[in-house]
Length: 218
Image (cartoon, rainbow, N blue to C red; front, side):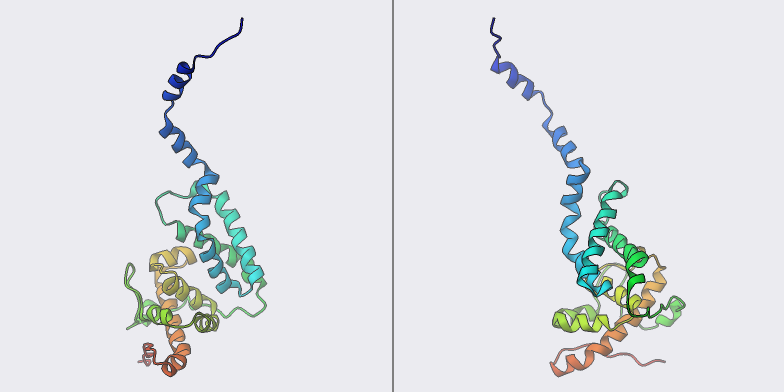
């Protein structure tokens, strides 16, 4: 006897499927979730990696290693929190632990010993909001000029300025990314911005672009 299939029974079974649950399960697939949420930051991470390594090949390797580590740690990421800052923290840690050691030029030191009282009168963003005058000036400068100026600043200052004025991170986010106290971030940012102003001042004056003048030491 040839078995027959009742099409109505198949539709009844399909009707019983909870499609929302299936969609949630698909969305919860780690690989799919990672690709949808993390990969859109690839270009931004590569730009940051170029600021760090100053070498396209090393920058590409750094980004690749960052994504490998990020995917391996994906289960530890809390959905709804700042994914961009989380990825930048992995990028920065990978750079410090691996690529900084390979730099050909000598490391230019840190200013971790600066105290908060040395920040007096710094033009800086608040921990949460408005963009600095440097960030506004950067917007009006050719990318090549800004890049050359940033590359001339010692690394710790350069990263602080880049994270704050180019990427728009708040103080606490930068502190988390760089694994430094927030006071140190503020110190580096103040000094880095002052260096950047000095480097950009001549170019800006020639073209009528306003760049805040450096305050004289008291």
